[in-house]
Image 1 (cartoon, rainbow, N blue to C red):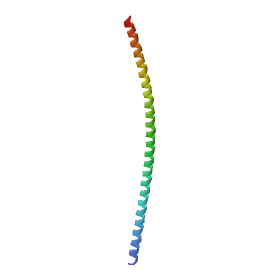
Image 2: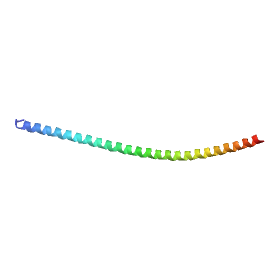
Image 3: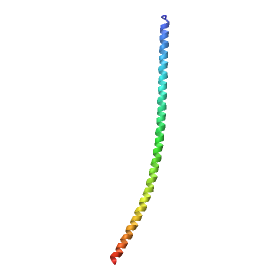
Image 4: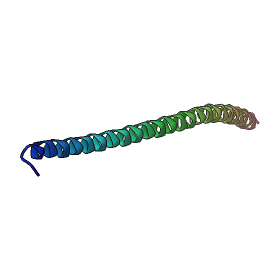
Length: 92
């Protein structure tokens, strides 16, 4: 190799290395971006699932509260009736 071609060769080698590094960094950036998008989609899906679960639990809680209220009213009526019956027996 002549003295003039060595710097050109070195410049060419350095340019190829620079291109390789740039391509590698671009590929890594693409992979990271895809991973981030995938993670964001998974998180959004999980958020939607949890929101539906919370809505279901809320509805179930309302239903359970109605059942408890009905049971309490029924128990109160039974206690009132029992108290009346006891009072009637005590009068006899």
